[in-house]
Image (cartoon, rainbow, N blue to C red; front, side, top):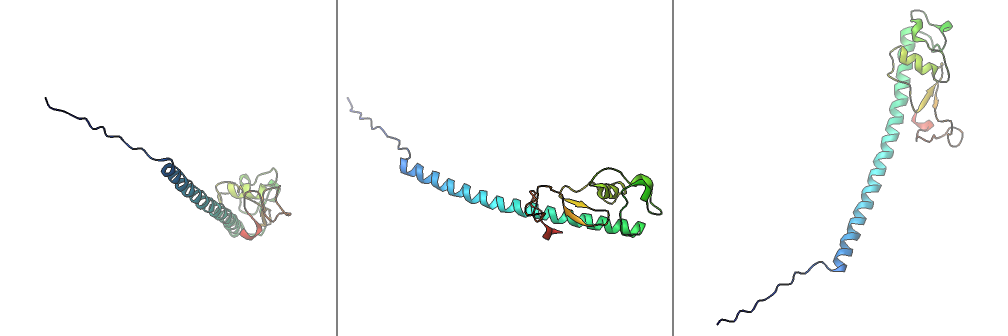
Length: 144
């Protein structure tokens, strides 16, 4: 008879210290990622505000060049020579922008800015901090 001795292998798992080190490393990586993404988001908001402002300026200039004058009509009584009366809208504070939209110079009214009939662009948010210096959406007067 042969003697067979069975040697049992014991599988070793991870120790508590090894698991804690991995968890700490993952936490550090997650923190770095969150702060990196936050910076990208802020840059995106600033770019959106600047592009929106530039779109309004360009639409105003195009309207002025095509129909002449320095004021965008906001009522049917003030339609410029050569303009279709259907382009002009009546309503509230975004009349100049809606006129530009209806005339085909913009796709939609701005969500960040308001344009007066005279082409002056200002922050749209009524809850702007420090008397119109910066709005809740991140746009400020320096982005015009």
